[in-house]
Length: 198
Image 1 (cartoon, rainbow, N blue to C red):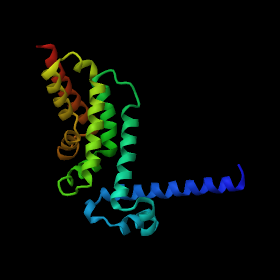
Image 2 (image 1 turned 30 degrees about the vertical axis):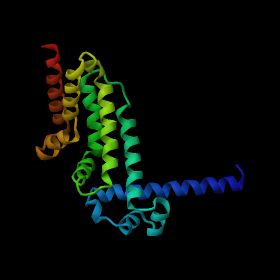
Image 3 (image 1 turned 30 degrees about the horizontal axis):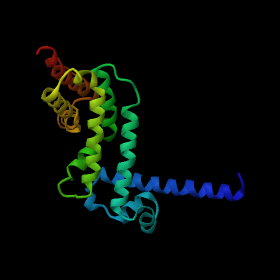
Image 4 (image 1 turned 135 degrees about the vertical axis):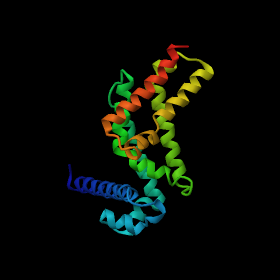
């Protein structure tokens, strides 16, 4: 690589690293406080950069939020489709791995949805991705049903696999990750067994 090409590559890497640090900063701050309590100066200080750099890279606090959502969405998709799932327990394992990493911040974000308009697009994207994943993971069960029965079962599966279920079991009730996995698996298996008894 020529000296000029090397400098351009190094500059591009530095920009990417700075942007990553800024997104990481917002993610960390959202774990501690509400979105409307976080300022651009807070993000910059946590990222070890300046307010102007944050504005130059993302335009606004909402721009950083959008970048964070895009990165989180890509990470969730990569993790959830990372391994084949042959059973309900396998599916819940993939789900638990995701929620153990992202569940707390997701719940905190959901808690702000009604008062922070910027969260609507972020959460809608997440719900759409979750629905696609559930339809794919449970296709073998869903394809045995038709019409309203299929729609009902999908709605029930979406409810049983929602992050709030994880939150209630792990945080509100204090179950371990292993216990939460067992309880979620049992509830879903019981739901799917109904299809074999009708």
